[in-house]
Image 1 (cartoon, rainbow, N blue to C red):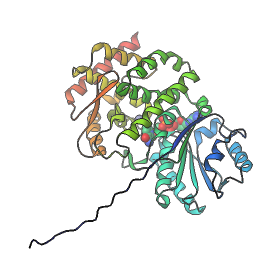
Image 2 (tube, protein in one colour):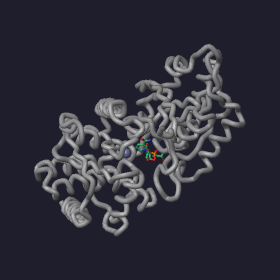
Image 3 (cartoon, rainbow, N blue to C red):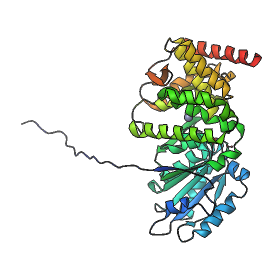
Length: 386
Ligand SMILES: NC(=O)c1ccc[n+]([C@@H]2O[C@H](COP(=O)([O-])OP(=O)(O)OC[C@H]3O[C@@H](n4cnc5c(N)ncnc54)[C@H](O)[C@@H]3O)[C@@H](O)[C@H]2O)c1
Ligand SMILES: [Zn+2]
């Protein structure tokens, strides 16, 4: 008789994830019941707030408004400590002291799995706070209140959290859907011009790989967006957030495979952010990354010159650069290998086969990448002379 060498028990279960992204204004005004309704339960939960210093500086009444709101709704929830204010921007993901501060607070204030940790700020702060909330007690509910265009239309509405380590972006992190996301349009009014513009590149990205009509809409709205039209921006954010969320639920939400369609334009963007010591913001780097991969798609014979020109024109109209010196060094191409490592497995890069349709490739020709960089450099020079 054949000897049995191993046994197994198969375990299968499904955990459904649901979360809502709300769109509102003046979240902490007494007339707005959204936040209180969201955290209302049988017991009075603790709420711990982590705020982006950049937002607090531009909204000096914010902390007082949060406290007044909490006091008004004291039967629904309680602020278990003073809101923690930490710097905004990449610094909060690069320097682990802020991440440690949030973890320590969970210990000091007894923040448990029936409590809520609320991150309010740009994408960088939300990534950091979400990660701390995810690992303390194996997951405390976290609510995100994104305050930049990029975080309202892209980074804040998804399932990824993390911080940077070993000089690499998002090296430590976890997939964890938020309890809810609240987009308050009011915050966007105080964004610096760069941050207003920055998140538009993520909308351009999804439009180019998935939806030609959205691309046409962005082409038509480009000047209004640059004029700070709030109604255009609200529509852009809503459409882009919707497309991101649809993509996450219909595809591979926890990115088990090597395919990363929403990372169009991102292999070089991540590298540029790092090479420039984060002088170049994520969204700005993504715009350049889109220009590079679109130029590459053209040089590889995948899209027409007319399509290339339309993409380049819209990037320029939105006030982004096409070229930065960091593109020309030898280090850029290392970004490809780092991107592969980050995906694990096979290199998979999204390129364009027409406007509104992406196609994945598994290698990029270094000579063609260099050629694409040189062409962008020339275009930028021509534009600056015009
Ligand atoms: N988790 C994801 O899926 C995902 C996706 C894309 C990007 N990201 C990450 O998001 C980060 C970029 O986020 P971002 O573009 O939102 O910028 P950011 O978080 O870097 O913030 C930029 C600056 O804006 C300030 N700020 C934020 N809100 C403000 C407001 N309302 N008024 C005035 N100033 C304000 C901040 O203090 C900061 O100085 C990067 O770390 C990137 O890696 C994450
Ligand atoms: Zn991005």
